[in-house]
Image (cartoon, rainbow, N blue to C red; front, side):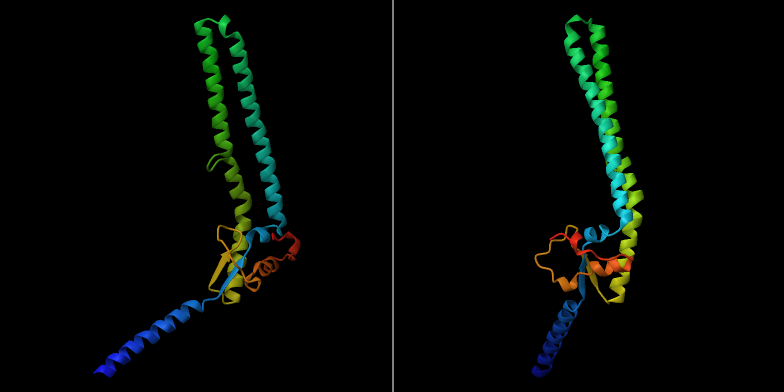
Length: 183
């Protein structure tokens, strides 16, 4: 009876060791999507377009707030000469212009605003293309998990042999340029 119980424990221990070994036998790799994206001309072009739109819209926002500042300064200078009704009218004008400027700013730069929508339109197809290439490489090389070095994952150490970024770049039809890598 004691032998059977021992054999049962040994079987459980063996099963645990095998399960643990199997869990650690998974094949890992990582990629650096920032590095990969630097190799894609369409991405660089999209970034330039987004930067130009951002600058253009920011100038519009700044101009609107500069106009409001001028209105306010003019109001400050004229305030003592204005009747109560004229003061209220000018104050309302300033408040309305400020609300319009803030709404314009929110519409352009806010959560899911115009800039966000443009980014989705221009960058998402490129990101989808990269994701498909990563999946192909992972399947072809029998990888179980692929992490992104460029995202919020913290690497205390990463074996360069596990970096598949250059393979992804090649899969996408581009030539890897190590000078684009961040050190």
